[in-house]
Image (cartoon, rainbow, N blue to C red; front, side):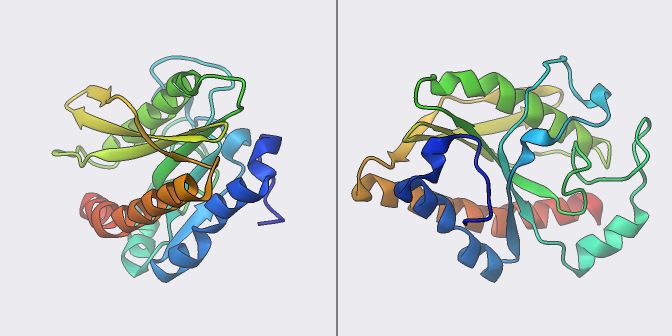
Amino acid sequence: MDRIRFQYSWVNDTKQRCIFGSMPSIAQVLNIVVMARQKTARIEPASLARSALPGRVVDYVVTLKPDAAIDQAWHRLRPLPGVSVKSWNYTTRARRNPIAIHVETKGPMKSWTDGKPQIATWTDAWLTRLTRIRPAEPWPAIPLLIAQGHDWHLLIVSKKDQKMTIWEEIAIGSTRSCFDAMKVVAVLHWLIDWAETVWRPWFLSLVG
Protein backbone atom coordinates (compact mmCIF):
# COMPACT_ATOMS: atom_id res chain seq x y z
CA MET A 1 0.00 0.00 0.00
CA ASP A 2 3.01 2.34 0.25
CA ARG A 3 2.85 3.14 -3.46
CA ILE A 4 -0.76 4.34 -3.29
CA ARG A 5 -1.26 8.03 -2.58
CA PHE A 6 -4.37 8.91 -0.65
CA GLN A 7 -6.26 12.19 -0.83
CA TYR A 8 -6.20 12.85 2.92
CA SER A 9 -3.40 12.34 5.39
CA TRP A 10 -5.78 10.57 7.79
CA VAL A 11 -6.01 7.68 5.33
CA ASN A 12 -2.31 7.04 5.79
CA ASP A 13 -2.52 6.15 9.48
CA THR A 14 -2.04 2.53 10.45
CA LYS A 15 -5.72 1.67 10.97
CA GLN A 16 -6.91 3.18 7.69
CA ARG A 17 -4.09 1.49 5.79
CA CYS A 18 -5.19 -1.83 7.27
CA ILE A 19 -8.73 -1.20 5.98
CA PHE A 20 -7.58 -0.58 2.41
CA GLY A 21 -4.90 -3.24 2.70
CA SER A 22 -7.48 -5.91 3.53
CA MET A 23 -8.84 -5.79 -0.01
CA PRO A 24 -6.07 -6.72 -2.51
CA SER A 25 -5.42 -10.34 -1.48
CA ILE A 26 -9.12 -11.18 -1.58
CA ALA A 27 -9.56 -9.20 -4.79
CA GLN A 28 -6.81 -11.20 -6.45
CA VAL A 29 -8.54 -14.47 -5.60
CA LEU A 30 -11.88 -13.26 -6.92
CA ASN A 31 -10.51 -11.65 -10.12
CA ILE A 32 -11.23 -8.15 -8.82
CA VAL A 33 -8.75 -5.30 -8.79
CA VAL A 34 -8.74 -2.18 -6.64
CA MET A 35 -8.12 1.08 -8.46
CA ALA A 36 -6.75 4.14 -6.65
CA ARG A 37 -6.41 7.88 -7.31
CA GLN A 38 -9.55 8.41 -9.38
CA LYS A 39 -9.70 12.07 -8.34
CA THR A 40 -7.93 13.12 -11.55
CA ALA A 41 -10.60 11.47 -13.69
CA ARG A 42 -13.49 13.30 -15.31
CA ILE A 43 -16.83 12.35 -16.81
CA GLU A 44 -16.35 11.67 -20.52
CA PRO A 45 -18.39 12.67 -22.41
CA ALA A 46 -19.86 15.39 -20.19
CA SER A 47 -23.33 14.60 -21.57
CA LEU A 48 -23.43 11.52 -19.31
CA ALA A 49 -23.95 13.81 -16.30
CA ARG A 50 -27.32 15.45 -15.68
CA SER A 51 -25.66 18.42 -13.98
CA ALA A 52 -22.27 20.09 -14.30
CA LEU A 53 -20.53 19.97 -10.93
CA PRO A 54 -16.85 20.88 -11.39
CA GLY A 55 -14.45 18.83 -9.34
CA ARG A 56 -17.07 16.27 -8.43
CA VAL A 57 -15.07 13.09 -8.48
CA VAL A 58 -14.81 9.91 -6.47
CA ASP A 59 -11.55 8.84 -4.89
CA TYR A 60 -11.47 5.09 -5.43
CA VAL A 61 -13.29 2.43 -7.41
CA VAL A 62 -13.27 -1.34 -7.22
CA THR A 63 -13.33 -2.77 -10.72
CA LEU A 64 -13.80 -6.20 -12.22
CA LYS A 65 -10.74 -7.83 -13.69
CA PRO A 66 -11.75 -8.64 -17.29
CA ASP A 67 -12.28 -12.32 -18.02
CA ALA A 68 -12.51 -13.92 -21.46
CA ALA A 69 -16.18 -12.92 -21.89
CA ILE A 70 -15.53 -9.27 -20.99
CA ASP A 71 -12.47 -9.17 -23.26
CA GLN A 72 -14.54 -10.55 -26.13
CA ALA A 73 -17.28 -7.97 -25.53
CA TRP A 74 -14.62 -5.24 -25.37
CA HIS A 75 -13.69 -5.86 -29.00
CA ARG A 76 -17.32 -5.19 -30.01
CA LEU A 77 -17.59 -2.01 -27.92
CA ARG A 78 -17.55 1.32 -29.74
CA PRO A 79 -16.62 4.76 -28.33
CA LEU A 80 -19.45 7.04 -27.29
CA PRO A 81 -20.10 10.15 -29.40
CA GLY A 82 -17.82 12.95 -28.26
CA VAL A 83 -14.89 10.81 -27.13
CA SER A 84 -12.09 9.30 -29.16
CA VAL A 85 -11.46 6.20 -27.05
CA LYS A 86 -13.84 3.55 -25.80
CA SER A 87 -14.49 2.72 -22.16
CA TRP A 88 -16.84 0.55 -20.13
CA ASN A 89 -17.12 3.42 -17.67
CA TYR A 90 -17.96 7.13 -17.58
CA THR A 91 -14.26 7.96 -17.78
CA THR A 92 -11.29 6.81 -19.83
CA ARG A 93 -9.39 5.98 -16.63
CA ALA A 94 -9.39 2.20 -16.09
CA ARG A 95 -11.47 2.02 -19.23
CA ARG A 96 -11.10 -1.74 -19.81
CA ASN A 97 -12.00 -2.63 -16.23
CA PRO A 98 -15.75 -2.35 -15.53
CA ILE A 99 -16.45 -0.45 -12.32
CA ALA A 100 -18.27 -2.35 -9.59
CA ILE A 101 -18.07 -0.17 -6.45
CA HIS A 102 -17.41 3.53 -5.82
CA VAL A 103 -15.64 4.80 -2.69
CA GLU A 104 -15.69 8.47 -1.69
CA THR A 105 -13.52 9.84 1.13
CA LYS A 106 -13.96 12.97 3.24
CA GLY A 107 -11.67 14.49 5.83
CA PRO A 108 -12.55 14.34 9.54
CA MET A 109 -13.59 18.01 9.64
CA LYS A 110 -16.27 17.52 6.98
CA SER A 111 -19.67 15.85 7.14
CA TRP A 112 -20.06 12.52 5.37
CA THR A 113 -23.11 14.02 3.64
CA ASP A 114 -20.75 16.36 1.73
CA GLY A 115 -19.78 13.31 -0.31
CA LYS A 116 -23.32 12.44 -1.36
CA PRO A 117 -23.59 14.96 -4.26
CA GLN A 118 -20.23 13.80 -5.61
CA ILE A 119 -20.90 10.10 -5.47
CA ALA A 120 -24.47 10.63 -6.72
CA THR A 121 -23.27 12.58 -9.78
CA TRP A 122 -20.72 9.95 -10.71
CA THR A 123 -23.03 7.01 -10.04
CA ASP A 124 -25.77 8.53 -12.18
CA ALA A 125 -23.29 9.13 -15.03
CA TRP A 126 -22.04 5.56 -14.62
CA LEU A 127 -25.53 4.07 -14.86
CA THR A 128 -26.30 6.28 -17.85
CA ARG A 129 -23.17 4.95 -19.52
CA LEU A 130 -24.33 1.38 -18.93
CA THR A 131 -27.76 2.06 -20.44
CA ARG A 132 -26.01 3.22 -23.61
CA ILE A 133 -24.49 -0.23 -23.93
CA ARG A 134 -27.95 -1.76 -23.70
CA PRO A 135 -31.17 -0.75 -21.90
CA ALA A 136 -31.25 -2.72 -18.66
CA GLU A 137 -34.12 -3.84 -16.43
CA PRO A 138 -34.23 -4.80 -13.66
CA TRP A 139 -31.18 -3.24 -12.03
CA PRO A 140 -29.57 -4.89 -9.01
CA ALA A 141 -29.25 -2.94 -5.78
CA ILE A 142 -25.86 -1.21 -5.95
CA PRO A 143 -23.67 -0.43 -2.90
CA LEU A 144 -21.68 2.79 -2.45
CA LEU A 145 -19.14 3.64 0.25
CA ILE A 146 -18.32 6.96 1.92
CA ALA A 147 -15.48 7.17 4.44
CA GLN A 148 -15.59 10.36 6.52
CA GLY A 149 -12.69 10.68 8.90
CA HIS A 150 -12.64 7.43 10.84
CA ASP A 151 -16.29 6.62 10.10
CA TRP A 152 -17.45 4.44 7.20
CA HIS A 153 -20.94 4.54 5.68
CA LEU A 154 -22.73 2.25 3.24
CA LEU A 155 -25.40 3.58 0.88
CA ILE A 156 -27.59 1.56 -1.48
CA VAL A 157 -28.64 2.76 -4.93
CA SER A 158 -31.73 1.54 -6.73
CA LYS A 159 -32.68 2.41 -10.29
CA LYS A 160 -36.00 2.06 -12.07
CA ASP A 161 -36.60 3.53 -15.50
CA GLN A 162 -34.97 7.00 -15.42
CA LYS A 163 -35.13 7.41 -11.65
CA MET A 164 -32.13 6.73 -9.43
CA THR A 165 -32.62 6.63 -5.66
CA ILE A 166 -29.87 6.68 -3.03
CA TRP A 167 -31.22 5.25 0.20
CA GLU A 168 -30.13 6.53 3.59
CA GLU A 169 -26.76 5.53 4.91
CA ILE A 170 -25.88 2.63 7.17
CA ALA A 171 -22.96 3.16 9.56
CA ILE A 172 -20.74 0.11 9.08
CA GLY A 173 -17.88 0.84 11.47
CA SER A 174 -14.87 3.05 12.04
CA THR A 175 -11.13 2.91 12.58
CA ARG A 176 -11.31 4.26 16.12
CA SER A 177 -10.94 0.76 17.54
CA CYS A 178 -9.83 -2.64 16.28
CA PHE A 179 -13.32 -4.06 16.87
CA ASP A 180 -15.04 -1.39 14.76
CA ALA A 181 -12.31 -1.59 12.11
CA MET A 182 -13.00 -5.31 11.72
CA LYS A 183 -16.64 -4.45 11.01
CA VAL A 184 -15.50 -2.31 8.08
CA VAL A 185 -13.20 -5.09 6.85
CA ALA A 186 -16.09 -7.58 7.03
CA VAL A 187 -18.29 -5.29 4.92
CA LEU A 188 -15.48 -4.78 2.39
CA HIS A 189 -15.15 -8.55 2.07
CA TRP A 190 -18.91 -8.85 1.57
CA LEU A 191 -18.85 -6.11 -1.09
CA ILE A 192 -16.05 -7.80 -2.99
CA ASP A 193 -18.06 -11.02 -2.93
CA TRP A 194 -21.08 -9.04 -4.21
CA ALA A 195 -19.00 -7.64 -7.07
CA GLU A 196 -17.99 -11.14 -8.13
CA THR A 197 -21.21 -13.09 -7.54
CA VAL A 198 -23.86 -10.46 -8.35
CA TRP A 199 -22.36 -7.63 -10.36
CA ARG A 200 -20.13 -9.67 -12.69
CA PRO A 201 -22.97 -11.97 -13.88
CA TRP A 202 -25.27 -8.96 -14.30
CA PHE A 203 -22.65 -7.04 -16.27
CA LEU A 204 -21.97 -10.07 -18.48
CA SER A 205 -25.70 -10.33 -19.23
CA LEU A 206 -25.60 -6.67 -20.28
CA VAL A 207 -22.64 -6.94 -22.65
CA GLY A 208 -23.09 -10.53 -23.79
